[in-house]
Image (cartoon, rainbow, N blue to C red; front, side, top):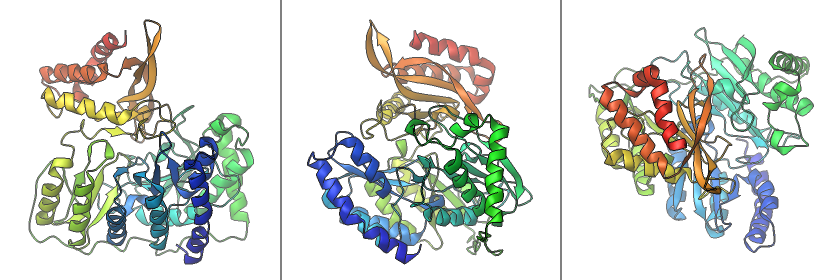
Length: 518
């Protein structure tokens, strides 16, 4: 990132400090402060007694150098809590001003960008987390995601941005970063080109993306990003913040086909201008030169890479909230391993890549007691209402209670799937495209509202099979762990895994759910 731009951002920090001091002193209301602080990647937490700070980690990749900086920041300022987000960033939580302010300055000094982490700005550019090392990928999309991330930073101060602008790159039909239903998604093809999807998004009024282009050359991606901005500037809804997202343009312009036409008109305007946005022809990954040393490893958390003899270890702390001391020890260990780095995933998993068998064992041992050990334990949860100002229900507490109940009942690892939990309808936990998802809500009991989560089923994130799922009804908080245990026991008794059982028994699943909904 251009150092002059970073210095320009740093010059704005004193004003942020003044506004933040005013907020904590009760001199600035919550809404006004939130509208201001998001530009700096920071929000006040629930209760207005502490702040969070979001560190942009482009494409989810954290190099050794940046990992060292983050570890030093955590130690120096005794950061209480951190969270791996579904946008492949790291959030620092429970920050008082005396820690928040120097953290922001140190991040920028070391090239870790915080600006635009919230508010009406381009968010962290997302990417398939194992791009470049995944065995079945079409091609390595990471270099293009990183180039897009750099370009997105130039739009942070642009006029009339959507309330969020999320750009994602997928390297295979697994669609890990949900590129087919983001504001703008680049989807890899086997021939080394991208298909482009636009105006998708989850939350209120969810929409799958519209395919606006096919088989474009990767060096052309920046033209498509600028066209996205110009399309929203021309047709986006600025009067209603609830509708200031790209997905609302599909219907506003008359439907997907009309939207695609409008987008491509703006794309042609970009090409007709004098601006050259073509990426260098040699913009490809430098490649991984490390080779295996003959050591091997087999474990459910280990993934063989396409580089012979190298492995990736998956580390998914419950709810995406790692034990800080384990994370710091992991940062130190990665520093000692040649070519190792950390990749964050949209499902809150951290992947440690480029390991020999012996090195993978060291990572496994270190993270053993803080890692999920089944698909269900690797479930996804947003940060939840105990922390988030706009949250409705405590999704993190629900997930932990459910994991404890499933462990106590000794449910087999294959009897329950990964579930996704959002504390409110915003779908930060991506519940809408999960086979089983929950969103925060309420349920009337004897005429009184009680804390509950609405059950969503039949969602799917896979490219070509995308589905937003459907809601079955609300279950009281306390009933959800019991419901999941009953489902797990039923599946285990069948002798099948969950996917096979559900395919044959969706009606039985619904019947079990109904006893908790009624």
